[in-house]
Length: 415
Image (cartoon, rainbow, N blue to C red; front, side, top):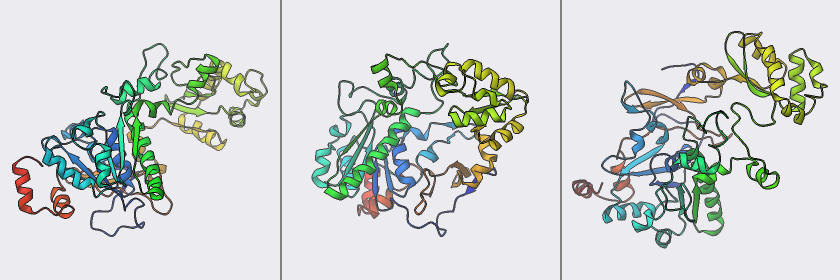
């Protein structure tokens, strides 16, 4: 599918612009699978780190089968989460596979893994063991509950971490059971915090020469997003509940109807912004009405205020409404789906979507690298690799094995 907002990525081998990538001097071994560990690897790879992804020789990362869409029967998620990575295979349940990967780790800066606590230790890769031969190694571990505590040994998927961290309870319609966002939010948050922790640990290493463990738990990453949830309960005994499209005591900030049947988000809860909304509505009197004059008053009168705004928005088509709101300095916008993103001029101007060369799809659209760095921005250099695509590259180029060595390892299903 083509669209205005998609920018064509430079093909491999062509001259690249933008200078060196900021993490281009780092080598990262990614042992994780599915999403939490691999998304951390993706973030580091987006800014130039050499990500060597180690996969099981038989089937590889299960993400290779996730996110399929007809008629292709192929994962459309894998090319994104594995972009900018090299894939090698190694059977980590076999001592020889463990030794191979240890040799790669000894020449690397970071190890990322998201297995259940104790798995690395069973494979002879406890942090203390790895530091014996590579004391500068940063070991980033992403799990559901963290490396310590009574729940550490439990299986921990992102959805469970979202529930424990508090976000599930407050998400959805108040008349229905807790809902979820339509993405793997808990995994992505834990991976993002893992990436942050990795960069902090690398900065510390530059001063001390020593690596350390980065312990990122899904439930804690979710908890970190929960704003004032804890002190509200601790001090005031206030329990946040599900409130649908609104936040408690924050108004106006909701979805409003238009004459042509569309829905527009308007967020004008701050005093000065509400004054601009009232002016746009032709109702400057609302600013001095005691029911709406302050943030607290508007929160207490949310239903009445939303009703007044909805009556006004329903008289206008969406385009005219947005034009009036933007001209008045009122934050407002449409609710985008993928197809709106492809045709939006702002997405296009900022190159928020790029097109990546792909051996099967020809050209594949995906989101660009964020955040944007002014001098050394990240780049999507290639889509997710084939299973074991870089075995020769890594095992011969980095470890110095011969072609005969590789053939023997393949024969014995070590790689």
